Length: 77
Image (cartoon, rainbow, N blue to C red; front, side, top):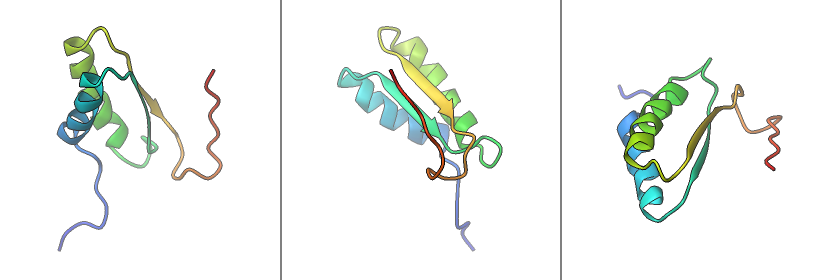
């Protein structure tokens, strides 16, 4: 039986992030709560590796501390 849910692995995050970095974008990623999933930590691994390879770009990974988007409010300035 296959699991119904699964955390994002570092390689999947890396592939997506790297494609955006090559296009010239900086990245802000808001992750599912680290208390409920390893997605945050896995994404941090990918971001750390890519920050070294693309020092001219910024990758920020934020732990939402939320289980869903409802009730999670962020203000970016």
